[in-house]
Structure formats: C-alpha cells, structure tokens
Image (cartoon, one colour):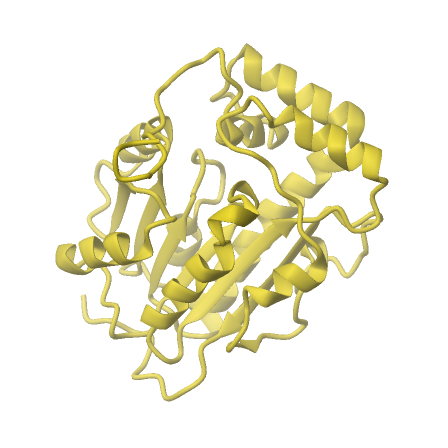
Length: 276
C-alpha cells in the first residue's frame, strides 16, 4: 500500500500472471507471456468452459454496445477496466453507428494503455487513460476536465469482466454506486461478472487459487450479489442472465460462469446525441 492507503500502481512484470493477459489468452490473443499462458491452461483444466465463457463475454460486450448506440441513442462510452485491445473494440462497434461517438478506455495496467494508445493514435474521439476505477470521484473529475465526455448528458458506463477483480473488503457496491450517482438520467450501466453458482466448492477454490499470485484476485459472486450492483436502475430486458443469453444465442451454458446485464438510470434524458 502507498502512504495514502492505496494499492501501488501496477508495474510490468512478465513473470507474474496478469488478469488482462490471461483473458487475452482465453480469447486467443497474442499479447501475453509464458506465465499468463500457464495460468490460463491451469484455469482451463479446472473449468474447461472458461474459454467459451470468455468469448461469449466479448460477444456480449459487442451486442451491448450495438444496442446502446443503435437503439438507446448513446453517443459516449466509458469503458472501465478495458483490458487488452481485441477484435471488435468498443469504439469500433460504436462507430458502426456514429463515427463521432466518444469513447474513453480506462485501465490501471500500463501495458493495456500502451497498446490502446498505439491503436488509437489517429482517433480524435477516442482516448485511453491509466487510472484506477476504485477511485470514481478522482477519475470522473479528471475526465470531466478533459471534456471528451460530458457527464451531464447520457452515457454508458461499461464494467465488463472487471468487478470480480475487486475484493469484498474494497466494497465494490459502494464504488459502483458512486459512478451511478454521477451518471445523468438516461445513462446506462453494463456489467458482466464471474459466478460460482452451481460450481462445486473445490473447483471454485482451485480456480480462485490460480489468481492468488496474479496481478489481481478473482472473486466470483452470486447472482443475488451481482444484481445488487444494479440497485436503483431499471433493468433492460432480458435482465441479468448468462452472457450468451443476453439478446444473443438464446442458449444456456451450464454451469453458468458469467452473468451480464444492462441497467438504465431513470429520469428524463436530454438526448444521447452530442454535437461533434
């Protein structure tokens, strides 16, 4: 911990499994190292379906962004804990609907930000910033001053496959509440989260143990605890479901490894479109 009680900034160390790079392995990416590949293989040996769940989660993110851009009229996106760039990034999907849609990627991993900035070198409406989502007031104040996002207008806050890297003693529900409080009426919150519902305790413990010495823990939560993150929001149909079932394939994976959903902040929206 630093002097103010915060965790130290992440440092690059290829010998330590990294949560973003393990996910990259599961997606079939190449931005990873031997330690990440070893951790991913051990995870797959415990839960063979985790690779499918990772790919389904990526597809869930893309369907959510298309819904938000095409149907909900959202033109600004805040992607928290974005992870390493992969096919079908948020700005690419949003720009299918509106080339002027604004996207801010946030991650506390310097490698993620380095890759993102290289990808976004010529994208004026897209920005990547290194910050910690656990400090919402600081993060949102900084983004507000940079003026790429207009927090007084509807936006989408994306917390896809990131909240399970926060321990219970960090009170992620309070953190999420702080973001919801700053969201304008008509804004949306997107969450996906790992779960151990229906998984034998030994398997869940073994899977969690793989992340014990990684860059972040992996904390599965129950459907009820994940639902708590959406408190005060109106759920978009079909609600909180297995990620592949959210306006997707209609199939049900058993056991469920990831839940996902979208909530809308009630109240009058001033409109999702922004002037260029």
